[in-house]
Length: 222
Image (tube, rainbow, N blue to C red; front, side):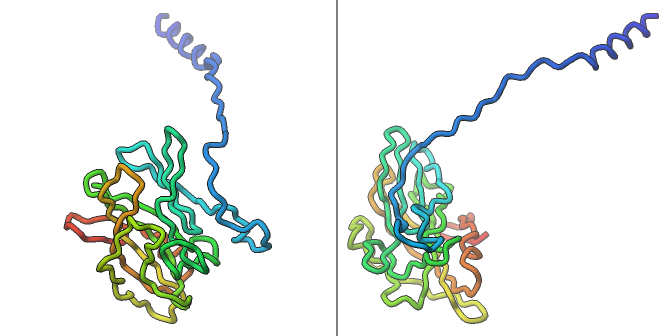
């Protein structure tokens, strides 16, 4: 008899209504307005994008966000004050004041300043990595121009030999290791680079993730 009563209690409990869950509300609101880097009077799909921001990175051990715009600028956003600072600008094309005269952005998608990753030991060594796309056919030097970013030290800088790939070369994917000697401010860093020639669509190289191995000063594409 006791067994039957227990079974009945279990059966009734299994069919009893579940307690109401607390309602979840999602609020969407503007966080920060970014500068316009596209064109207001164009019919092109890519140029019509007022800002090409596909992501952001939380700076390790700091209350700041690094925000790359594929059209060239790399911003630092102070999360407390919402102050936006142009840390670097990769677009040195056609009278622009940025660093790289061969930056390629016309194809949209992953072209331009594609991504940024922080070194695992960034709080101590100030290193981070960027990937951007260049068109070697564009006139001008492929050396960085620091005229607008005097904190970016280019003395002794040389580009690395291009790593060639089979077939004709359309673009060059450039992996750069930057070192910021004072990560508490927004002054520009210094950097070496690795270049990979590619005939593939521009997103192929930019989707690679750079990370340091256990050997100091080594970079691997994952």
